[in-house]
Amino acid sequence: MVERPYLSKDLRRQVAYRAEYLCEYCLIHEQDTAFGCAIDHIISLKHGGTNEFENLAYACVFCNRFKGSDIGSIIWKTQTFVRFYHPRRDRWSDHFQLQDGMLQPLTEIGQVTAKILGFNHHEQLLERQFLIAQQKYPHPAAIKLMGKKG
Image (cartoon, rainbow, N blue to C red; front, side, top):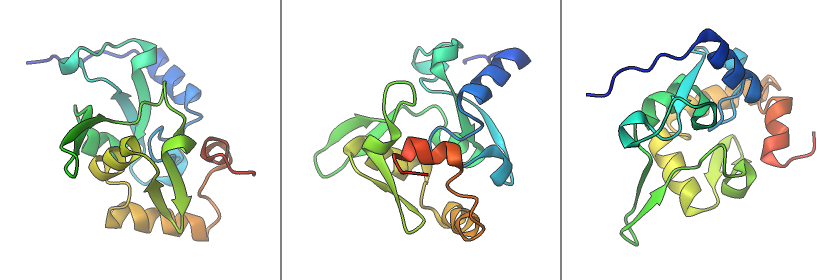
């Protein structure tokens, strides 16, 4: 059994600050989600990941819960294992785009990430559409990552 890691308050603050308080997967701002954000191990400890700063991401409760310790999924059409989007190595705009409130995958990496993290599940879609109507999503910091002009 993998022990629950100890992450200092300072390290947690650094991860949140680096992410500009956005979920590094769906790009919702922590102030705009009812359940807040948490620290995610990009590569989970049970897969050999570490508690190092570079392996930590800021994630909303939905993305964090659905991702769990997974590191990828299967594209069933090709029977190929594909890794998830990696916030330290990948550019968000290369793998996803915002279209009518939905986060559309552009690549296989985007496809498995969006599917497993539930980007377009009913609850997340309703939350995002509500925020769009209030002009709170995407947050200005997210617009930069989406490759849009703000």
